[in-house]
Image (tube, rainbow, N blue to C red):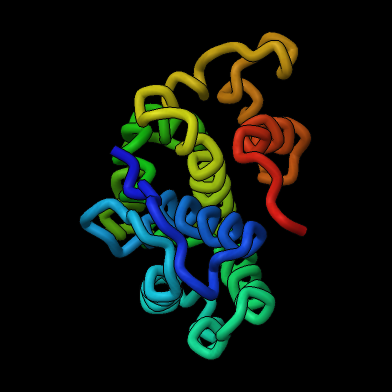
Length: 207
């Protein structure tokens, strides 16, 4: 079940641009394992974003300087820069300490290891923090978390797993998983096409 089931939006998040960014933050934070909620989120308000910012800062050192700006903003036009900074901080910051558990829960260890191009035994050591996650693997893991965030609004967990394995016309008949091959880097052509395909499901964000 999705943790994001919004029924209302409170000021100062009540503008289309700010609300769209805030929802995106919740999706990304959830995929990264940084969404501190046990019950579905039904109300989009400042408190929800503050909890995400505190969780990101304490768990992964992300966005430490954003929390004060979120608290000070009293209008949508003042809230938007702070929300955008938090969003961009999450997008560019791998957080293997929380992302391993989040993605294993969705993809399972076998598929996740396959997509990352590592062994299942290595995955289990990284998950248990028995071995430091190398930067290139942390980047791939974060890439997959962002793809999961893109897909989460359209697919359940089973659908997400199938999405990586099914051939796609827009990928020249290949599956997304097939484009994540060899010693891939997140800015390689194949991963870039995978991210673009997944991101198209999210709709436009305010720019």
